[in-house]
Each structure stands twice: as structure tokens, then as C-alpha cells.
Length: 224
Image (tube, rainbow, N blue to C red):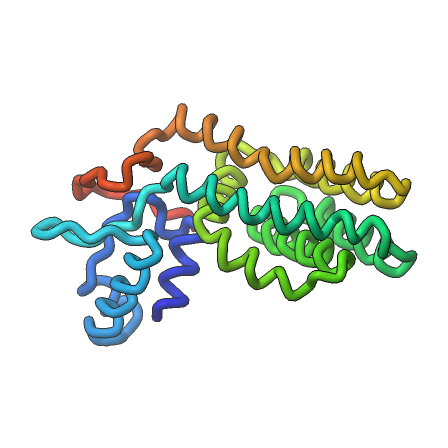
């Protein structure tokens, strides 16, 4: 229950500001209200849900501070690992990275497939650097970052430039130029902030910088 609701929030299926009715969720998932309530409490602890007395529970709007913190952690880990990857890259690892890039290009505008392959690419880069176990720490830290990334992919960030950024990282590694690889990866990881600014211009109601904005109950479009 918790994992299912968490996944729907992070993916954007339950978008920022969406009302969360215990009764409706219990009926939809064929469970009692108790596990739904317990799940919402856990999600509130992660700042993914906000509960307002006499008003109800809502999916939290995207908090830029949480996104920035998550991006900081992710960049620190992945850049540090990339320096080791430059020394460890061999022909099989390079071929595997090229294969992921080819599948990303083939994904076209399939956002969900690209997101899955994007995760595979970054996890593989950590593995090449000898730090595959650090992926769990990255995943744990980046839940709020992933919400912003999903919004970007759905609205303002086409897939092709992201694949080109991945390719630039791999090409630099293959050329034995770790500094260029690091620059390319850093620019790629920070591109999410440009996406956020474009999304905020279109849909400022999806974001908060205060963490205390009180929502109004209204119809929310659920992406499918």
C-alpha cells in the first residue's frame, strides 16, 4: 500500500496538489481505511503528503529546497564515482553503456521507458566506477528530485537532448578525458533546475518554497 502510493506520487500519476481521500483510496485498492491512513502518515514523514485539519490530505507540492538537497547528494556521489570510472572503463563496460544509449534513442517519446533506461544508465556508471552499492543511497536521496524530473519529462524536457548529454559523458570517458566527462555529467545533472523554472512559469501551483501552503480542494488532472 505505502509503496504503491509512493510510486504513484513520485511518477506524477498522483500530481502535486492532488487530494487524497482515505475512503476513495480504500475503495480503489479494495482495502480498509486503516492501511491507507498508515501509508499516508509514512508519506507525510517523507514530505510527500501534507495533512491539513478539517481539510484533508493532499499530495505535497514540489519543494525546491528538497529538490536542491537531493540533487546535491546525487551529484556528489556520481561525480566522485565518475573519476574512478575513467580509470576502470574497459571494452565490455563501454559496450554496455553504448547499448543503453541505443535503447534510449529507440525509446523515442516513451517517457516511462526512457526514465527506466535513464536509471539503468546512471546505475551502470556507478558500477563502472566500482561503486554499484552507492546506487541505493542515490535512490534514497532523490525521491523529491525524481518528482521534478518526471514533471520535466512530461512537460518541458524532450528526451533527445538528454540522450545527447548521456552520450557526451560516455564519449568523453571513451576518449580518456575524465575532465570533459565530469563537466558533461555535472551539466546533465543540473539541467533539472532549468526544467523546474520552465514548469514554474507554466504551472506555479505545482510548487512551493515554503512547505506550508494550504491547498484548496479542486479537481486535479491525473496523468495516465
